[in-house]
Length: 179
Image 1 (cartoon, rainbow, N blue to C red):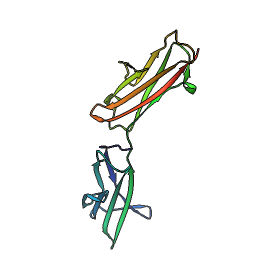
Image 2: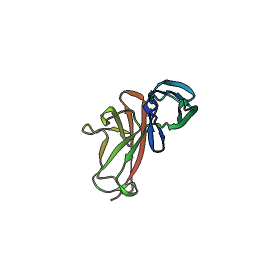
Image 3: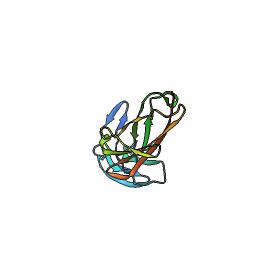
Image 4: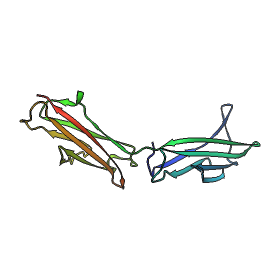
């Protein structure tokens, strides 16, 4: 799903009786939120970027064929916009674990990057900076052997697109130590 600044590609086909019709010679108009985006003969595809900010949670994209066999054909679709998110995957039932260590992973969603390496991750454990140089999206925490059963570990992560500092998300999880 697109976020702010995402590149979006939309295409239109005209289907009648289960067959794709040739509209390559027809003038096609594309509108984004009621503003002309593109037009031209056979312009069946449009590529645009979502705006950097929006007052709405969606974009309205309209395609129009003004003179197809004497009538105007019109189709409007709403494209939802989402904010980036990151989730901490904690494989422990009821967020409780026992043992000398705990491992968690950051799962980012809706960032404008094609690879996990395009994101930076900042981990905090009980308010202290913690990191894993091998795989920044994963974190293994060693548990103090003196920690009493029932004590908690507060883990937070912030993920940020390295190419766009405004594209960031954070998450938090609290794990309970059982002995």
